[in-house]
Figure: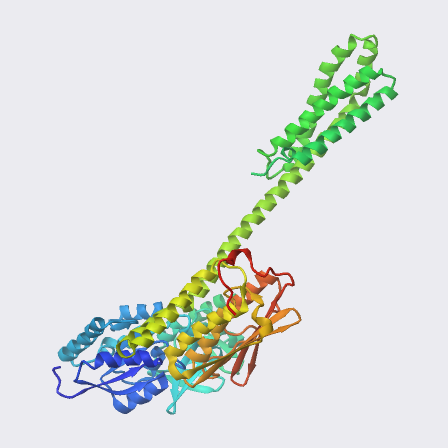
Length: 257
Length: 365
């Protein structure tokens, strides 16, 4: 280990035995300290904020929020080695975006290989695996193509985590570096781009009607002509969403007009 | 290809009876017109044999050629031309044959006077046969199509069910193997036990594929095996309660029906929660139904039971419909944070105590 400061690691997995085996293999690396073990994503976020670990071992399928959703909510994610049993979408996401991952069950050799890869990268680059090159968004984009991912959006509001089912969303609005998600229970900010949502949400339900707006077509009550070449969509909540010329074409196609 | 109707014994017999009746009627009619019995018999036999041969030919021929469009014009045309040919043949055979008899001249005159009536009768007979044949082949074709559609549907259904079943299994399997891998280092005895449980579970899974109905006691024991494996994976978090009275232990249920329901309960009750959970399975007998309830807690924050069948139970609903042609056998209930799936399985009074298929295994009670 080239660095003198001890390396801090966190294991996040809902199965005690799965955490145990990572702990066992990590026992061979005296320079790495396990600062905490977490049984779900909520605990994981808290632990990451508290300890600022260098490395986390993250399971994908977990209660409440899964590994990807957890990662979305961490502001400066540490290096991640994913551990998962079987999830074709997750594996596709890992493979395409150069994050190392361990398929359960894994042996010590495979574990050592992943860890050595990370240690080498850390020594040469001094940066972590996942955050360089803006891979997080692409990784999450691929991962969110999984049918189980598309059902909801996870946001953090006032230190609390909120899970928004897609049917509760009225529309999305661009807000600088964030996207504002308007729902039944108020609006929430999410640190993603409009094109991220345009790509990952079901295009039959969510239509990008304008550069700065994506709306849930189930909420539409009326479409009124507005200025030249543009329209205004009135939602059930009374909200008015601008519709551009191109957006109007897309909206009509989805609504079957 | 559809079978010709006359290739079947029953229809051939009916056909020959018809022919005999027509021949007899024609003899009586001709005698009534003053012909001698012998002349009438020869006339009737020759003309009816020709008609019968033509009808046989027609119905057999349609097996190979039946136009899809314009089939009714085809019937009319072929009946008309066949009738004309029959009549010409009758004349060519009968007039020279019967003219040598004493009443020869009279017969030739009689024939030329009676030909429109003869034509009418022959046309009706041939036409009827043609229409019956068309109906026969159409219904045969329809039946074949239906059969094919059913087969295709069944295959698609089986594939779909197989796929649905596969969704959870790999996850369960790999995670269980990972648990075993973790246990090998510290608790090898327990690892060995879990390998045993997992093997029994997989063996049961394979065996079930070719079974029809299984005793409830056996199914419950199998589910306990599955739940025990989950208990190893999730340690102290999972508790199970299985209650089943003596009276319903021996009732029979379709295989692979309860397992997806319990897997569903585990998915939402255990995989998606963080607290200690209890999964309860209760079975009872009520008015020729065995009623099985599976109850699991769920996290209302992360998963919402949808209205109707809720969660992923639609394939079980479909399966029950295919088995019993009823849609009211699966029911779900949401109370507080408890989700309950209730399935009612009709118990036919005369289910064989032991289906022929599973005669090799000993009943477990």
